Length: 228
Image (cartoon, rainbow, N blue to C red):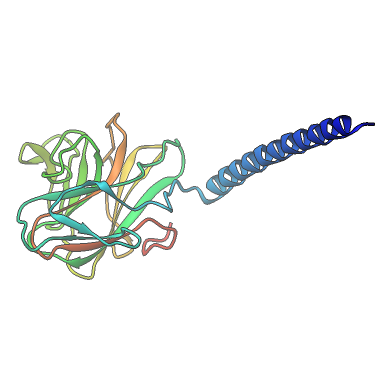
């Protein structure tokens, strides 16, 4: 076998090795997906564990923490409603639970914690637009219509719920199979029977602040105050 033949043979072996590596990599990726699905099925959760606040979907009046972008604070120079969306939307699965929590580190007038389409303007509060939903710090659930409900700025509003303030941990989520919304306070599940998410739009975790000094920290899991 001459040198050219040896070179060709070596090149063929290299090509085969690369093909085998690609096949193995595809198998590993497929296995990872199966493991993720198994974990999802076992845990019954649709969490977005690597989620964080989206700097590209954040009102200019808000400041995000540099490192992990879980803390958001309203700037001293800005007054008025300012909203921020998470990077990842709620799960598209039709089983399990999507959920996240927010710890209140500072609060003035109103803080809104909920879910919203990223088509919602950043200078309004979550719950203000059709297909958006929120738990307001004064004890209102906003965005869920039922016969005889009150209205806040033209949006369905259920009052008389537990208010929240500095030090409280508020949770928001969805039962993905039934589309019933979940709200919690300090690990306790609040009554939301019949309050459904009926928006066809892709929904994102969303927080709205309104006063200078308002400050929150998000937790996208898996260790929550509320135990599933």
